[in-house]
Amino acid sequence: MFRFNVAPLSALTLTVALAACSGGRPLLPGNGSEAPSALRGHSGTFTVVKGSIPEIMQMEFLLTDGSVLAQSANDDPMTWWRYVPDAQGNYADGTWTQAASLPTGYAPSANASDLLADGRLVVIGGEYNYPGNYDLQLVNLGAIFDPVANTWTKLGHPQNWKWIGDSPSSVLPDGRLLLGQKLTERDAYLDPKSLRWIAVKHTGKADFNAEEGWTLLANGTILTADVLDAPNSEIYDPAKAQWTSAGSTIADLRSPSPFHNCLTYGPKPKDCYLPPGEIGPSILRPDGTVFYTGSGTGPSGSGDGNTSIYNSNTGTWTPGPDFPNNDNAGDSWAILEPSGNVLVFGLSGGMYEWNGTTFTQIGSWSGPPILLPTGQIMMCGYSSVVIYTPTGSPNASWAPSIKKYPATIAAGQTYQITGTQFNGLSQAMSFGDEYQNATNYPLVRITNNASGDVFYAHTHDVSTMAVATGSKPVSTYFDVPSNIAGGASTLQVIANGIASKAVNITVTASRRR
Image (cartoon, rainbow, N blue to C red; front, side, top):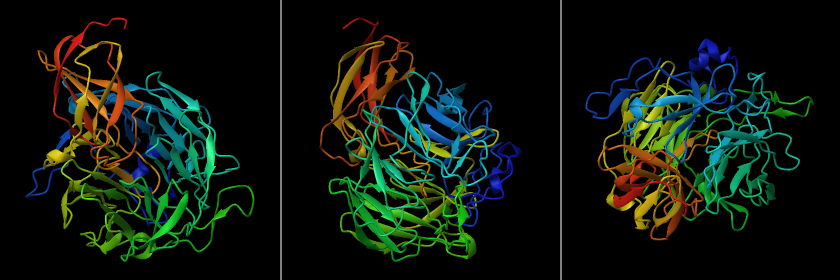
């Protein structure tokens, strides 16, 4: 993503902030002051969260304790906020508190970002950096957030990577964070234990990584649709450190680039970048298909966006329908709803559901979204937070299943729980390239039988970050909140907004084990 002609963010000009390679993307459609109405014939609901939002937010992450971490989009993006639901687990009546700020000198926008298996959040790179947030910088800085300590720590970059920018990334099944360098075919992974970057072979890559998004498949490989080398698609096998062609997407998913001359991002004349265009988000669905969306193929990315469907079971592409309303999803979000439908956020501000066959417009969106443990979608708008509750229910076979668990737990203690499908069937969240905020990790929700109060335990050290793990055992550790109420309770594991069947447990006062 690349923005240009952007006034200070505090002036609320984010609605006209442009993604130059796609012809423009409104970051926060609508004014967010009231809930948008669902369109006639659609029963999904929009609810305005009680209380005011402290700032405009540019990005949201679901942490493993059920809270939402959000980054400010105002003059200083170093500022972060944390949102928790009320005592009954209702996200429409929660509380904001200010979280720790990023290290001095690092306040990125349009960066790579991933939640690790241990529950920490990595932010790396950035197309922009504050101050000077409106000049292309392709910054190579990074930081890691510890949600328990509420601290950010500086994180280095891969050796000899002088720039990163808005790069693709994904956490691999074994927990390593794979990062692509924007302007080359280079890849590197972050070891989550040592926090060292290690260069990886990138044999076979057809083009550079710029503007591409990565989708983790059930077999542990990564799918991408090329932007520079469109309509080619590629698959990366981490075990072989090798890219191979996945064939033509058939439908043209890339927008044309409006630039004829390259853009400078450094002090030297050779520090020059010619954007190849933009593309939309992609989502792996429970049936093994990947719904890929495109930017507009008209001038500067305007007009109807194409779509294409990759069948990961057969390795084939099939063109999908064009977006309705002369709309597209270039450099925007998509979410896998618990029902298996894909919610796509159009460039115009329209929200569309894809059911595997057709599009249905359901209303308008207001601010960056995140999938909540409740299966709802939270969007941080200008002056308020809006929650969308989609219709439909998940197939019972998609839910996590608890196999081994502690029958009695104590406040402040740590336990292990084992079962299947703790990571869901998909990463569930996607953007065109940067802004990764996948939710394929387990959450533990404990509900007190007497009061109905809800407590989310902090989960960490999940045994895999794969998706669609089927009958393979998966385990995670969870820390029982110190303020949890005692007594008879139920416990559920949640992945991608889908909850397991509840098991009965007893909560006791904290004790030394």
